Image 1 (cartoon, one colour):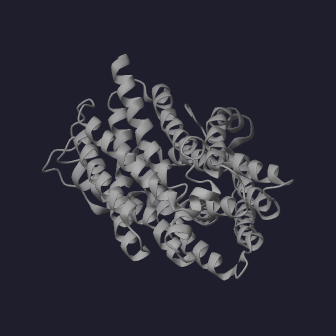
Image 2 (image 1 turned 30 degrees about the vertical axis):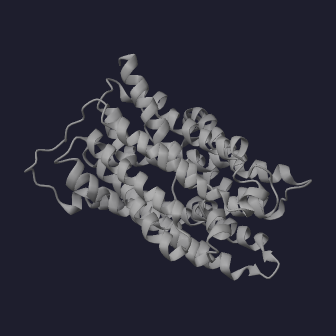
Image 3 (image 1 turned 90 degrees about the vertical axis):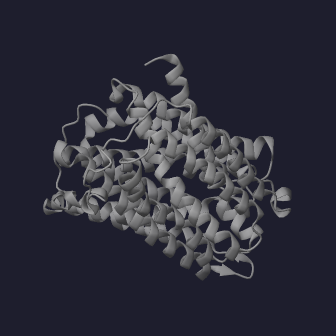
Length: 409
């Protein structure tokens, strides 16, 4: 790969995830402090990510893969996204904010597949080259959090009270505009299909892979994948407001420890996977979700602050050991014929259906344990901890150990 192409792809990845990290991490706190949103309203806003994930395959399958170059539709979506970000910045009520964030997530979620498509089409050896490009996305997410906490201080107690978190949408909007314009300079990535080539809804959303559910182990993995997304939704929705409300300083910056951890454990995953196998690896990931929420339930921003930091740092194990190893398992079980369909089905089931249910439950639980004095965070975290523990037991008892052949991780 030419160095100029490597730079283009790396910068694209950096901005793609800088944009997401610039506003999504602090969204829960913004909704509560700036728009006085209830738990249910906050859950509805976060669920726009799930609706975006559900709709994204149709945008990619029906439009991007058939009619337009990937880099051109990527540019157009991010330019429109910049306009929607500006509208979110100006919104003063949840009823005004919601339509813009819904439209934004419907347009943003397809770009996650588009940046991968642009990258893969330029690579001669994706298994070895992609990780070096993709890591810049994680660096972009980390950079956004560090800027919010340590340069602009928008998440400080004083500035949060002043409503300064709205500036995150302005920052994300500027980055989105830059990426939108920059995308038109990316290497040409023409459609994979001819304009008149037939494509079915069944193929787009991965229903071809449903026959894999006839395998008992894969069916248990599939169910566990959906269920584990319920506690995952609690983290996305409640972690930042929780850290802010208990008095942690620079919460956004400290939450980047989770992304740093993600990079570190990604390097350890191949060793763990090879030595202990798929079942033990994924069980460690499930257990980590339960442990982190227990740490949140009993930690505080004072003498027990280390428990909160440790809970954040567990993100690498939570994500890599479950979701990444799950992708590896899915590839191995599906084989070449159903590989793409199976990954699409798992993505739809987790980030779509699973998290949609999770955000709804998280919003309801948050409202239930809201008091005049604030929130009963011990119960708000112990409930998803119990759900994660139940999924752990389900998987441990019913999933039969099997060897998974993996050439590359």
